[in-house]
Image (cartoon, rainbow, N blue to C red; front, side):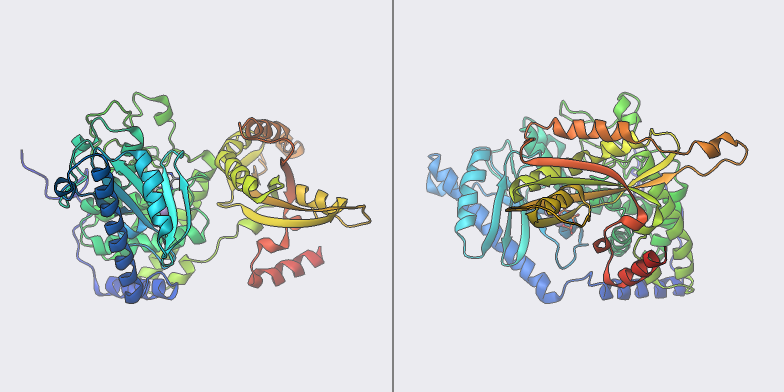
Length: 524
Ligand code: 3AT
Ligand code: MN
Ligand code: MN
């Protein structure tokens, strides 16, 4: 069988070489991204390499130490190896100055998970370059997080079934996954997916520039968050890679312009694939909407290329899909003009208008009386917020429940009953109040924009009853988050209430927006 000479599951759409104007537009894109501080300096790049080299050495020393401890003669222990791999934005070559380095440590069979999360942690902690170190060994993907000479590192661990891990090891072989602990399979996955993406694009440089552009755009437009139901880093990388496959010779600027149109016109829920989904040696589920009802429910499936293939966008809801489609449409119109020189790239990156777009919002305040508890509680509420969105989507007359991509954290030192009340309820009430024992309350506040259905002129009754009844979604959501096994009724609370646009806290806006908002509010 003859191997196809192209990347992807269909032949390219066009093999056209870029025109002069497309090369110009791409150069302007690179300049604009540089102005947005998206590229690190050569010194910073060099520093990252030094840090990675040190971590590699620390890990190899650690593997050697464990091997000797396990009774291996020193001479043999020198041979067992151990290798680090990077993944995430650094591996893709689209990282910014503040990005972390996502690093996977691969060890031979006799190095146990506990060894890594105890001993390797101790060794790192003792290094003078290391600060802010913490272990999350119970997570879905266990990780050691730390800062090494000012560079943030996420360190994952996988233990293979072999007795040696040579420097030549390649993680692409599916057979490596046999008989591995599930946590190891998950830890290997990030690296296998990024490597596959790079292997499956025809022109890596064009892909990188296009993806950098899409990341800046998606963050500015507030549609970059897997947790909240939008595409996350992996999904954005895959969809950009797919468009690169369709136009192997196109310049990055044109790939971006085509990208928005293609995403907008895509026949969702047809999946975005970089290669055919394949079966493999594990007893794990591979994405398949014909077999699994959950998979069939995915609205905008973007499938990871490495076995076992998974949907990176299972969190997308009716509302977040609608928001993304609106953004694709806006961006397509702007990008078409940019490519022919009639518009600037900065127009594409204009900040979203989330906090002025809707007349009504839902405000969700998660609070606790100590910072540590609030970190966990705020995280739990965030991870469940999509459930609230999906319940809101069922409310009569509600067209869209649009979650903002991040929560806002605040600490409030309270001296009076009223201040305490305000902190818990996200209000700003004033008046006389009893002094209390001073207390600090920590809050994380989330917002969901509520778009009401347009009036239907052909149906007069639709104009009368336009009240939104939100009580069921609100009470159900409160019940859901409070059923968390670490919920502490004494220390934690949640307040969910509708809030009008003009009552949104002013600190949601940046300095340039504030003046305008204040003036507008004084008028009404
Ligand atoms: P940055 O430049 O670092 O902001 P990134 O794409 O590298 O962008 P992350 O470092 O957050 O983003 O994530 C890198 C990869 O790690 C993406 C995904 O494969 C994995 N990952 C991130 N967060 C989680 C998580 N909570 N659980 C499991 N895997 C995760
Ligand atoms: Mn990263
Ligand atoms: Mn990371």
